[in-house]
Every structure is written in structure tokens, then in C-alpha cells.
Image (cartoon, rainbow, N blue to C red):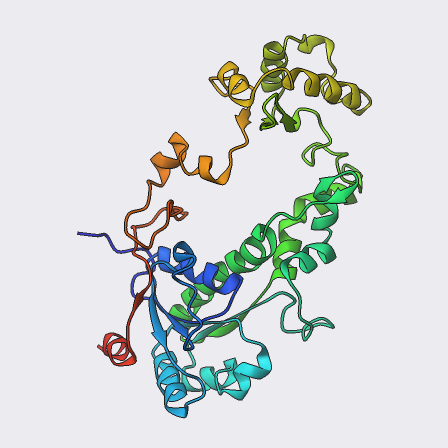
Length: 356
């Protein structure tokens, strides 16, 4: 018998949107919440990226029909939380905004996901993940000396907004259970990425971080914390910050660590050139074989296909089963009971569940 997750009994309505909304809903469903994802006809993406839409039911409602909106409002009246990624004017015009929903259900937690937040001069402006990274300093700090690098949508959409939205929802729902009063959770990627940049900004403010790329300890500036191209055009990642790891790295590369001042920035250019030359002499997997115990913090840079087959990845999240799961279904974190992928339902079944 499957153990109930820590959020068992919590009811969430996810009004379908792109970006952080499905990611936050996935996290809540992974932790056991009963999440129903409301989509309009012809808009479902669950078959394309099933892992992102796992663990919740899918309810198709056509917002052009008043009866569908009435059904949705009835569902929201029984929910603990709503996650909405629609522009404010759209949700308000449909009668689905936070004021209207919370007037009917005072204990409701209404989560709003956006790039810029609900207030401020950019609140009404469209924007993407990369734009948020650009305005928070994160994009400036990531990449090579001559150009910023785009870190997928990991920082803005997912970590900066979706993860903070899920945390805010859980916190507010706990508060509502204690007080009976819900609230609006304004999750803005701008705020979340700013929070994620707290360490870097603090180091910069104290004079311990240079305001340029590839010039610092963990931005690729340090030769012992970067990637190196190998003889087969593949790469290894080196994270030998700890002096003991640095000593092991040097030993395997045939260098004397005692004669190399690890943290002297003046030596970094020459150190980097020497490391590059030596790593280029063997293939990636040959180097991995020379660092078998992990003491030097050297790992292969795996492709997407390779990453899914790595022994540790398989031990933590086995290959997915089922025709719609894809080659690998990423395991959720923190760990909770395994949940299935999205499944179709109808409003009668959904209301029956929530009105028991």
C-alpha cells in the first residue's frame, strides 16, 4: 500500500500556464497534495513533457462558456490553494482573480506566478526567464569572459519562481490551517533570483567578488573550479576547492601541489593553461578512470542521454515505466511517495471527490 505524502488532504487547483506554474504544481503533487490541473481545450502539454505534469488530474474546461467558469469557481471554493499564471486583467475579467475567489473562500491561498511580480514599474510588462536574469545581475555573472551564458530556465522559471511559489503556498496553507485566513502569494522570478543571488551580492558588497565573469572562485575564474576539454572533445568538471582535493588533483595531473599557490589569483592564468594542456592529453573517460575515488572532485560532463544512465542517477531515480513516461522520469526532491502521471478526469468526478 502506497504511503500518503506529507501534503495528503491538501487540495490545489492549478490553472494551466507555462513556466513556473506547472513546476510548482509538480512539486506540490510530489509531496502528496491533490492537485487538479485545469486546461482549456487543445492546450494540454502533458503528453510532450509528462514528467513535468505528473501526479495530478487534468480537467478540461472551456473558459468561453459560463457553465465551465461556474464549475471552476465551485471547485476553487473547496480548495486550499490556487496557482494562477494568467495576466491579472485576464483572471479578473473571468472572475477568477484573488479578490473574487477569496471572497467566496476566505481560507484560500491564492498563488500568483510571474516574472516581475504584481507591483512595480515592470509589473505589466511581458518578460522571459533570460530578461529576469539580466536585470538581477545573475546573467552578467555567468559565462565566459567575453559573453554571458544562458543557464536554461533553471534559475528564473524553476528555482527563482516555481520553487519559491511552492514554498510560499505550503507556508501560507499552514498559516490558513492555523488561523482560518488565507492570503495571496506573489511569487516573482525577479524576487526569487534576487534571493538566490544573496551570497554573490554579499561577497561583491564586501569586496570579495570581482564584478566580471571568469574572475572569481566559483565562476570559472579559478583553474581548479571549471571545465576542461579532453582529447575526445568531451569535458570533465573540476571542483577541487578544498586544499586536499586540490592536492589530489595535482598529484594525478603529475604536478606538485606544494609548489603551486592555489588561491593566489596571479598564478591562475598559468595554472589554467597547464591544467588545460594536461587534460587535453587524454580522453574524458580515461581521466575519469584516473580519478576513481572522487577525492579530487573530478567528474565527467555527461550528455543528457548519458546522465539518465549514470549508476548513481539510476539508484536515485530508476528508469521510468509506462508508454508515456519517456526514457527517464526525474525523481522528485525532497523524497516522498512515488506518484503517477497526469490522468484525465471530468468535473463530476472531481467535485465528487472534493465534496465527500
